[in-house]
Amino acid sequence: MKSLRNITCLSAALAASMLAAGAQTAPNAVQTSNPTTVNQRRENQQDRVAQGVDTGQLTASEASKLETKESAINKEVRADREANGGKLTPAERAHVNNQLHHTSKQIYRDKHNARVQNH
Image (cartoon, rainbow, N blue to C red; front, top):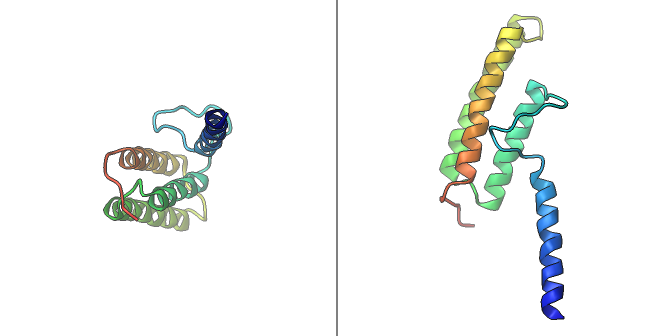
């Protein structure tokens, strides 16, 4: 009976973690519904890095490098918007999305490598 209760609790915990992980897709996954904006992607990636640091999946060095990349992208977006009256041109948006795609893949690789941060 005790093992059945443990299995039930484990199943519930696994289901909850899968729901939380649902917001974080694999880097090669294609999102067909409701494409995100550049701002939403930047915010989601920042959240993924913070979650990786909180859980120890990202080392301090990995997080620092990712933060540096994100900062450079943020500066570029800010400069592009200032130059174009607050909007990104389609070419700039495509360039930023490409950069965000590469950064997203790096976040995934860093979170799933063997290196962990001890708390």
